[in-house]
Image (cartoon, rainbow, N blue to C red):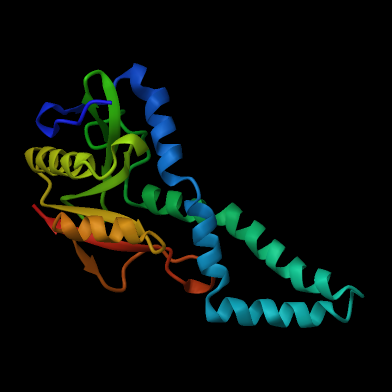
Length: 213
């Protein structure tokens, strides 16, 4: 495989024929993120206490110690799988956009293309405040990570947002994504304390990063 030339990478709007490869890149980028987030929430102090109390109560109903220990964890994990991403979707809808990327001037999706190959993507939605663009669905193919593709997509996203009249960009980053946190810090975003999506028992499942344009 030839070495990637960042100057030869084209960032353009999503086309109909790009949908399949973009979907695969998104799946590959975010696979395992849900399980890591569930593990994070289940190991918070209040969650561990609640699971311990539930296990103790079950010991009076079932004869198996293992069943009493495992059943509360299984039920909690199943509940979190059903609700975690619904919380994220609701937050997106409450920001004011109910359309799919690319279906309106405010909600768009760009891809990075090099030598006919789709390298990554980034989408824009409305932020929670007026004049604010929300950066989401940032993903890069596993073959081209750490080659500057993500930073290139963010720069183009910011340029387009500024041209369209936005004054700031907001991005939600999973609390379990150390790579994501470091990336947004490196491209000039600052964390906003106390703001983010809250999940089970009130524990945050995302951090918010903001950059003024």
